[in-house]
Image 1 (cartoon, rainbow, N blue to C red):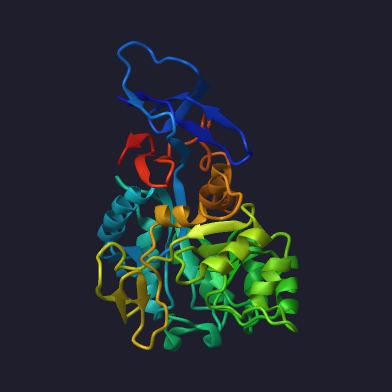
Image 2 (tube, rainbow, N blue to C red):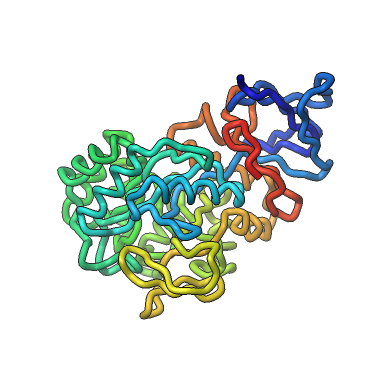
Length: 384
């Protein structure tokens, strides 16, 4: 029998600037039945009563995460995905894209098969796969293993999409590499979101890429050609674009707070997407962990290879939200855009996720005014 219950109090924020103050949210099964203001629940109803200043948002969607809490997508094991997905709920994350790393083909295929066949259990919902690499530029490899980098190849991508049961939703690649624009054409034609990343492309390539369907920039500033006064590079080209959305690792390490604030001023909430780019060691404290077969050393808030290269993050989505709340003039409506609405628009899930509205899946993050997580509802069940 489907559970039927209510959330009362707080304020619901929407991406369009609207809000409901002190609403009554009716949930049945995994769906929101209604969101009404100033209404009382039926007698004997199951009710979660909130404080007046509690903030009600759509559950966060992390479209770029490799691992966390001792688990990694590249483990190629359903048990790892299930364990990770359960722990992500505590950050307010109710959906995610499992993100691969440049690896040898056997490891990539195993991970893709596992992700493609995975059925969400009690944790955050797996919405599909973010294929990061191997179709990248070695000059901007970052922590991606050099020996496994491959030139963009439509045939190889088709093989991997088949292994993934069609679940690859986003591909990070370097369009300037041989075969890059051909891969872009194929991604655009098949409804896969093309994201420029680990790229040394210049302005002209990116302009051509936009014409052919380029949609995202992967972890802005990191693993891409920076802004120069005679060549905008990837960063400057994203700034000059009117359509490209940009992932941002808002941990104040991958991108300093000043550069993050600049990106907020230039791109605004309509084009920024908060991500974690987290790796296996997130949530486990200092120590040595694995990323793509490489040892990664975590000290405090930083995860680095032996040579000092940043190697993913230990950022949580709620911490990213708290950092975003320091941007001048930001609102909770903007937070909705950057944590869920922009993501679902890119993934084509606008009528299912990314809003606390009638008919949408009951994925909800209840936050305190300071941006800390108070409660999380995932597919209609209270998880935190």
